[in-house]
Length: 170
Image (cartoon, rainbow, N blue to C red; front, top):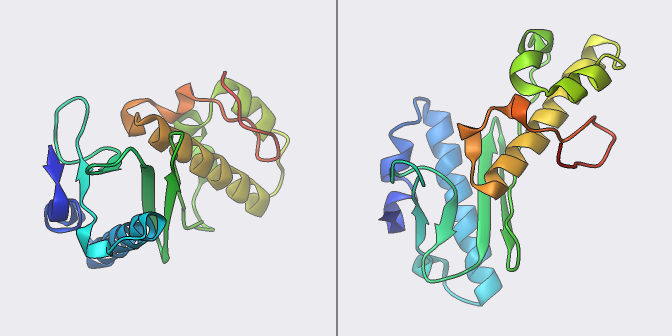
């Protein structure tokens, strides 16, 4: 198990190639420690985080708080970071930076389930399709983070449905 400050930066940051990504990870981790400390009326410097892959025991996977049953999640992308805390259920959070020029149609088979692709056909216009695609992507990553499966499960195997519908299994 990897715990403490190693999650907070040194070990995990090394796998991030871009300096900006390493800084966002550090910011998100600090933000998470502050949020956890606030929820427990404690000092953020006392919050110890752990991260352990359920498959290989490597220092990646869903983060946790040492000595606590609090469920946590963190994310960072572009100029955004986010954290989520939940005392009584699994939680997952994700943010993306929408990139206007991305060819989302080339990624539909990798990300959307058959049912979602059928619904996606009704979305017209490049800006609307891009927004709908990244909305679905973000919902899927949040669910996969909450379950702890991460990207070990192909996104196309999970259905969260169309952008304006509620998420559901299927």
